[in-house]
Image 1 (cartoon, one colour):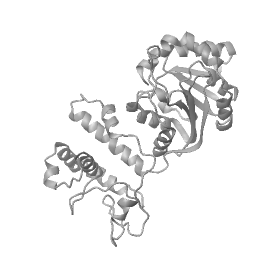
Image 2: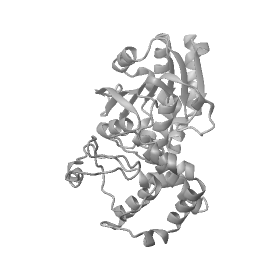
Image 3: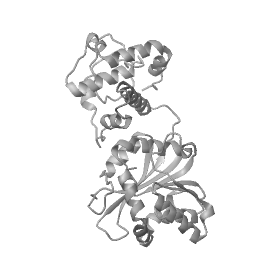
Image 4: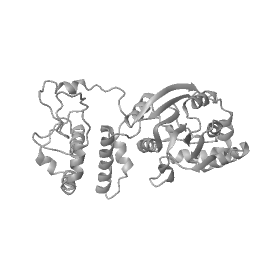
Length: 349
């Protein structure tokens, strides 16, 4: 979470807490009552004044409430004590995305609720935030997020407000294993000129290895390699920000697919499975040297070069001059089984 936003909440908690408790929230509480499992284990990311955590506890949910602001956690604790429910809600100061060693990442929840948090998550942390939400949710778990997309920082309000369209957020979470259950908008509960958007997802879990998961692993591996090559001077998050761009809402793959439609014999370059009689989509055409056999990491390298250079058709001689390509070749030589599994792990099309 953005540090300037955490600092703002710490410094202004005494003013913000009464405002949050006075807000009109019957609409969002109705949604929580409809979609959250009664008596389920619920994690709240960004509990703020403790208002929604207290409501979920009144539903019989076992609530773990977190907030990045120490002041907000303190106010929530006092609020829970006043209501006599402090023993029923576990309260933690924690800023998402969490460090890899954090204890919460080993827990599993029936639902994760995140109100007015997503716009405070920088683009460089959004991917890790989403993956952590997916990790801690049980299969078919519910993820509720509410956010605005039309606010800007001011001299008096230095919080980060990242503007993201609902369609962009929906597609982003769907790409990493979520299914949309509900999408809606509502006016601001404090009467401000702000529109709030609520998306409710269901986790599809990790029951099978999906192509998007494998691509995710390659991207993360690539970021780690660049981080190592730079003597750790370039943060992994900086590299991921460059690699992960906002997805287009609509993607037309028919033009790319038409290039291959006339071929009687068409094999997947990764698995060597025949595609002629299988259903398949073409997301991007990657020009590679004929007769070559490349790993996923090598194809990813070629794909990036084509995006930078344009109509780029590399020769093996050119590729072998690249330090990263030589590193990948050395890695493949030392990890033959790993690269073989990488090629064979793709499910049938």
